[in-house]
Image (cartoon, rainbow, N blue to C red; front, side, top):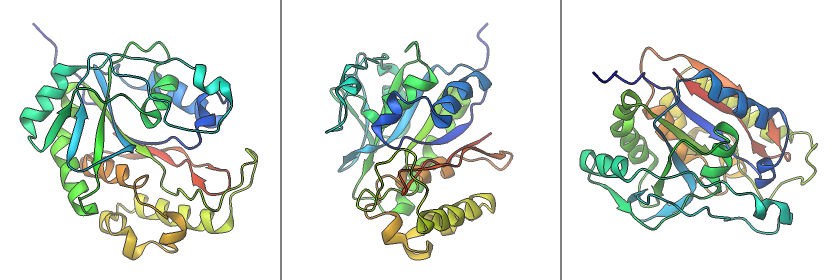
Length: 259
């Protein structure tokens, strides 16, 4: 008799600079330690800030390509190999349950996915899939799609929103030890306040309600994965902050779980 898989948390995990791939810092250590606190999932699905499409898609390959979709970084980053399998049967299951999510059989896993997975599950034995961000959807529509994915938490699937809640590459300090810019700290505090208060409306309508929104998010794609995480929260879940740092002055690494 098969056992019912345990309900898994839903996460938002920042990925920040690709330098976090090889970094030994409080953030990378948090990821390594976190995976030990939850049941082993049958697969991880990353809602990727780095896969922008017209329409919603899920990776469908059994052996997805590892994508080095970043440029101008030290050569050592391009020699890091991390290639977990995909899980086509899960992609098919999701497509049947939510037909608006089409299957892309050739898309690989970008660094919003594998850089997180490398720290969470270093042995690459857990299958990894990604879901894209449909650029034609409004924030509310992204949130609504996230609600449809919530059933996967009961099927042994770990779902991760992969982005950054503040992501300004125009106003940045490339010193890894840089202190947070005052404006970034203020906006990050606003986001934390809204998360703790479960003010979903404010977070979905961030473009209208977040102070200095254009400074925090010159483009919105790194914020949108948050909406999927929020949508999959259940009333009995508790919020736990996993990381509250700000890297390079203007990149929020705030990461959290609902479980």
